[in-house]
Image (cartoon, rainbow, N blue to C red; front, side, top):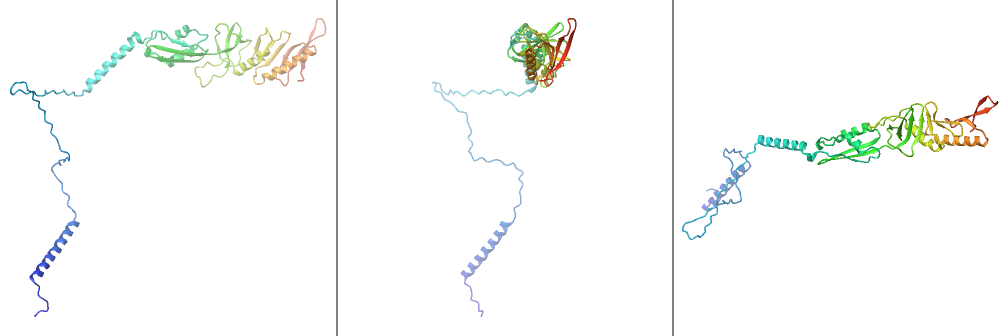
Length: 337
C-alpha cells in the first residue's frame, strides 16, 4: 500500500479550483504587460455632446374667432444675403473720393478770403498779403513751409515767420521783425543794421539809432548755420558791439565815422579827430583812456588835432604848434598813460 493518504473528492475539487485560478491570474498578468496595437478607424468620428439638443419647433397660435378650423401661422420672412463684391465697392469709393476732391477745390466755402497777419510793426499787412498770394486760393493748396520761405526771402528784416492753416479757410501768419540799432550811411544811400550785423531797408523814422557815416565797406559777417533763410550779415557782430559801446561817448551834434583803415571815430567839436579802431572787447578801456587823455590835455591848456587810442596801452596824440604867423607845425606826442 502507498504511504500517501488518499484525497477525498472535496479536496481534489478544491485543488483543481486553485490550479485554475492560478492559471487565469498568470494569463491576466501577461495580457496586461503586452503593448496594445494601434487601430486606425476609416469612419469619421462623430463628436458626442454631453448637452442635450433641443429642437426648436415653430410655435403655433390658435385664436378663437368663432370660426371652425381657422388657424393663424407666423409669417415667414427671409433676409436676402449680400455677397461682397470688391470691384463694385472700389468703384463706389473712387466715385465718392472724386466728388469730394471736386467739391473741395470748387466750393467757395474753402477759398481763403485773406490772410491774418500778426506781430508786424513796420511791414504792412498789405505787403505781406501780396507776397503770400493766398487770397482767393483753395485752402487745400496752401503750403505753409513754402509761404514761410517766400516771406523770409522777400523781407530780410523778418527774423522769423510762422504760417498756420486751419479749415475751412483760415490762414494765420505770425512774423517777428528785426530791431534796428544803427543807421549806416555810405555815399548817397543809407540802411538799417540790427545787433547781428544784418542790413535791411529803412521804414520810416526810428528813434534811438546810432548814426554812422562810412567812407568804405566793412568786413562782412558770417551767416548763422542754424538759420539757412537768414541773409548774410553786412558787417561783423564785433563791429556792431563796438559802435554800441562807443556811442555813449559821442559828443552832442556829432556823427560817428567809419574808415576801413582806422576804424571808428569822430571829429570832436573842440577841433580834433579821434580814432578808436574796430575791436569791441577792449572798447570800454579805450573809452577810459581817451577820457583821461582829454582831461589831461584840457588841464594843461593843450588842444590836440588828432588822438589815437586804437591800442589802449600805447595811445598818442598830435598837437599843432604855431611858430610864426604864416607857418604851423604839428607835434606828435606819445602819451605816458
